[in-house]
Amino acid sequence: MFKKIIGLFSSDLAIDLGTANTVVLVKGQGIVINEPSVVAIQKDQNSKKRILAVGKVAKEMVGKTPNNIKAIRPMKDGVIADFHTTELMIRYFIEQALKRKTFFSPRVVICVPYGITPVERKAVKASALNAGARYVYLIEEPMAAAIGAGLPITEPNGSLVVDIGGGTTEIGVLSLGGLVLCKSIRVAGDKLDQDIIDYVKKNFNLFIGERIAEDLKIKIGTAIQLKEELKTIISGRDQVEGSLTSVEITSEHLRAAMKEPLEKISEALLSVLEETPPELAGDIVKNGIVLTGGGALIRGIDKYLSDIIKLPVYVANEPLLAVTRGTGKALDQLDLLQQAAYEN
Image 1 (cartoon, rainbow, N blue to C red):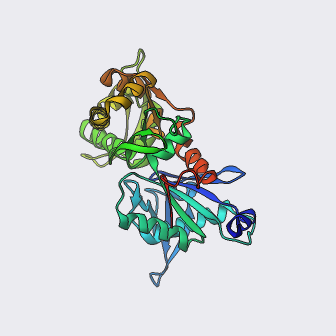
Image 2: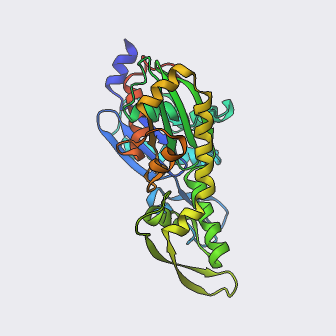
Image 3: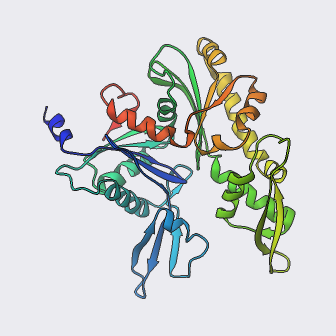
């Protein structure tokens, strides 16, 4: 009863702490923050560090900072790579989400990749607690993605979700409110960006940064051949002459650049399907597979995967926000979803 009374005076949060973006949902208000997971830190003459910017402003500084400023992505492959900076980032986002003062600190549900270690779980929880949370719950990404995509996970039927995020791709088979089978691979948006950088360097002798690679992926990236290939002009530094130059890049080039990571994602999906119990496999054959995450927005990726696995593949409605919405729904039903969320 006391906890219920406290809940009336606090604003509970759902946080999708992603490698590329952090999205925060406030209970009763919806999504209030959707910012890049980037922190800009400045060193003064005495080597003391201070936060200069967080989120979009910090991301705009990537690759453009002087020596005394560093734009850091504290999350790597879906887990905390820089504990202190992650804590500062979480604290900043919590403060921004709760602009009005609350008498009690919020409860927080944080989405994490499947299979992270106990040490990594402890680090995520500690970051949120130190940032001002009252209680911290963790929900695994495939579960959150499935809930957010509207799959009937509490029914005695098999559902399969593929969440292609920034640091990891999570593939989960769900039934009766739990994860029956899951696979997490560290091949996702960041790997696609890096392979684009490497491809442009190898084939055009051109150095480009992460931001340009990501823009290329969004603008002309495709997993399948298009009737009319897309094209754009990019600028960078010629690695032979050292001069600035521009080249034309097409969607065909992007498809070649992303070939290997997309193959690894399809191989992981095939592996999960092979291990799925026959009873649940029949449901998946009938209902198909749902894609969530930023990677689901790559042109033709649903058809690409469908052609390989010979099953229907669908892109969820608003795939970028599926995990956050699922995490928010878990916040509303903590008592019913204890198998998916773990209280600190």
